[in-house]
Image (cartoon, rainbow, N blue to C red; front, side, top):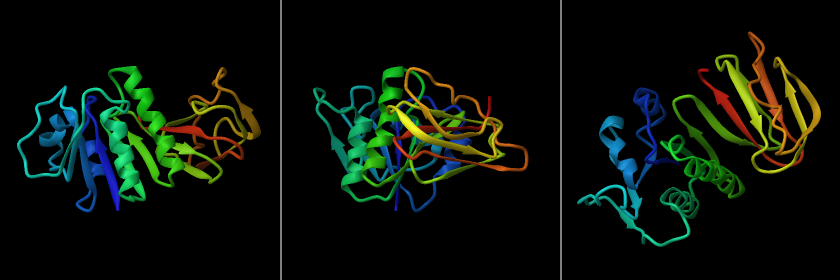
Length: 207
């Protein structure tokens, strides 16, 4: 099964967000992510939060109430719960934008999920994000742009094929991000992989 974590960041394109959610998904709302419930038209299967930014709902839904003083954000706690419950995939919505520190932390949570063997992604109004490793990933030309970012450390053996800016066995370090705003060739599906390290693959849906 797939878990969907819904955070409290703004979701501008609710129709796009709703299109990701299926009846079979296990939906987790994190604290003020509950403000999206009506717009998304999906009731929670689990609610998690310390309820410092949203009133604790009176509901029969399973709810995990967290202390205010804690190491993990509500979203990271939800990520750990996804791993604990054995989901094999996870999509996060409403976890980017607004406060940059929360956005960066939520992007790092993709790596936590990846390391636990969970196929994970983040989707927002502009893009879809996932961790790229040795397994090749594809980007169709329905995405006008894509970027590869070294937010998880030094990477080597970068290969990019069927894209405007191809690479073969390249390296990249966090202090020089030259993998931004590539494009699949028209009519082609770009293919990307790395042999050492992890990268953030960002598939952009609009500029």
